[in-house]
Length: 457
Image 1 (cartoon, rainbow, N blue to C red):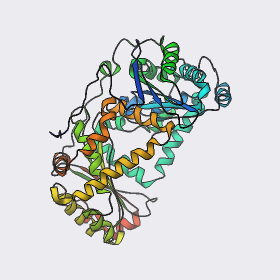
Image 2 (cartoon, helix red, strand yellow):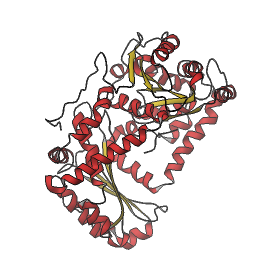
Image 3 (cartoon, rainbow, N blue to C red):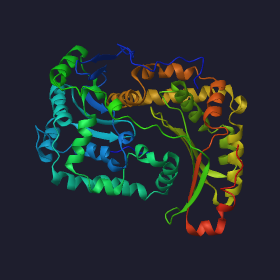
Image 4 (cartoon, rainbow, N blue to C red):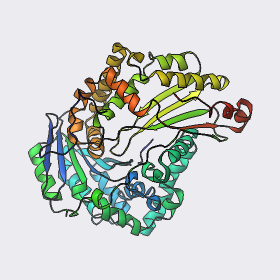
């Protein structure tokens, strides 16, 4: 249930809410008097309906004393509430309705979703209403669920890549690391109380901080009427939670920092570099350029894939960007060839140093990258029950207008936009670098002699 790991003159993105958000043809939007936004996605492929509620909550709302509790809160959502006062009754009702259900917690969104027969729409909306508005946090339920949530953390720690991610992110975000770490902290998770759950609910779980999506074989007018009848008396907070409890601004990385950690579970070395990338509030166009750039770099035909993977300096190479309202991370993750680590590091820096050149990619590669992004979007949209997940993510971290315009704006990205993006966020910018390696390889290969002494590009 948890989350797993430029402004360009030619682009025009809406960054503020409008009275009526622009959405695709089969998407319908209304805002209730209490501030709850409702989107109905009409899709008659299968006789099913999916409902999802997303809340602007998650790691970014968590100081150290609450690290991981948005995730625990998500788990407790499926336990007990006013209408179903214990989990046995909760589960029995999901079985009666034939539901498939789950939830996720990320940096800037917590979402809950149910899929069921279209004829159960009203019953499903009422079931969701009881869980989101009237939860019961029983001590015995929390005692059972805390080890489950902490177990997800422990499974992550069994992966050397996760250990490396934790180390790099701690150094990237400093004392605000908990606001980028949805999985949380062992001690905080294992000592959580019902009172702390209520603190989270009383800060963020309000209609004016939430989005309800109804998707599938439904009629929009009927769906909106049911939503209003069931959720219309959900009381607004009377304040904007993110104004009353503002998210601290992340500090820029001051200087490039390298670190090598040893772990017995690292059977081969892993390397990770992280930059601080675009922030939707300040550079919405840059977030789209970041996606296209990542898709470009992951093409097998690119110079850096050929120079590093095809020539045997690395067995795996990936670059990604996570869109975020509050500073998205740019991550480079690689598995270098242990016998050629020095050559790998030298060539990696050489390739990064060339990326700001508009000629580093061809027009054909840019076209292919955009086509891949579009195909991935089309594949994702083929399953109606997945449509709400994408919409709620963009609503929480960007806007509905951004979601609507994304494909068109992605197609407008030029090689100059990519070059400007790299210059703004990568070239000459400080970054955080890390390596995880087992003790035997560390002694044999001595990466400290070359990994931390690279020239800046």
